[in-house]
Amino acid sequence: MFPESSTGYSYEDCQSTADWLLSQTAVQPLVGIVCGSGMGGLADGLKDPVAFNYKDIPNFPQSTVHGHAGRLVFGTLKGIPCVCMQGRFHLYEGYAIQKITMPMRIFKILGVKTVILTNAAGGLNQDFKVGDIMIIKDHLNMPGFAGNNPLTGPNDERFGLRFPCMSDAYDRELQQLALDVGSELGFSDFLREGVYCVLGGPSFETIAECRMLNKLGADAVGMSTVHEVIVARHCGMRVFALSLITNKAVMDYDSEEKANHEEVLQTGKHRAEQLERLVSTIVARLEHNNNYA
Ligand SMILES: O=P(O)(O)O[C@H]1O[C@H](CO)[C@@H](O)[C@H]1O
Ligand SMILES: Nc1nc2[nH]cnc2c(=O)[nH]1
Image (cartoon, rainbow, N blue to C red):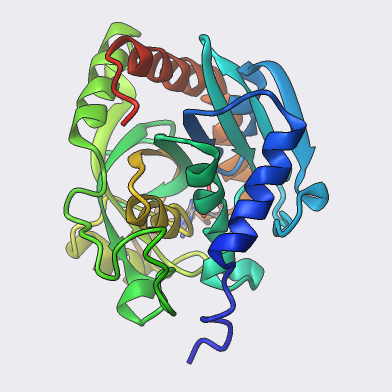
């Protein structure tokens, strides 16, 4: 059903990519950050950055989506060594799901303990507003229901278990930390919690689909993150993830609104500064609590 499902990268392929990166930079990252659509500015906060274009990194896929620069940036955030993906990969770009998620395994081999993922998402929860930041507490993996899971194929125990648990995918301590940090920064008015649903994309949802997803318990919908979370948890990294609500999912046949990628990128720009402060303060507190792992 998924012809490329066994053509993911081997442990040795991932190791050689990680070794190549470590031979080019002195930064040994403890935190890995993934920038969502229009949120590449998160990487601009890194001190003493060393950046690699994806096209120059052995085995790395290429970014093809506007708003995803396609660079891996190493540096420090408030003194903590970090690596940041300025651009991620999506199913709709045509990559096998194992390729989309391969950077998580590179993170693991590089020594990353905590992964922070961000995404742009449509708000299904009727209480959400454009510009809200939703702390992800759980997910609905729609491609996974259809058998497209990034762990499909032979399992290499050096990465993790054949049947990893996902009921604790989103670290509860980190969710609380984010709420605390958000409140201290005065962000409580636009900080939410909820369930993220991933679809394959690239078409946005119909009205009937949005209504269905909302009934199923999803608060936000997007086309990423969940695959990365599954692979990150499989290999034992802690995960924190958030969605920027860039548009309201259209739920009403009288609505004139139409989802579009330009609005998604614009909302990212508007919230860029607050997102950067939220993420960098969370990273700084990781050190304070000594809770990378
Ligand atoms: O999830 P990220 O990468 O933030 O991007 C989101 O924004 C794009 C649609 O505008 C889709 O790729 C969707 O997944
Ligand atoms: N699937 C999906 N992805 C998005 N990314 C940003 N907004 C949306 C949306 O409304 N739907």
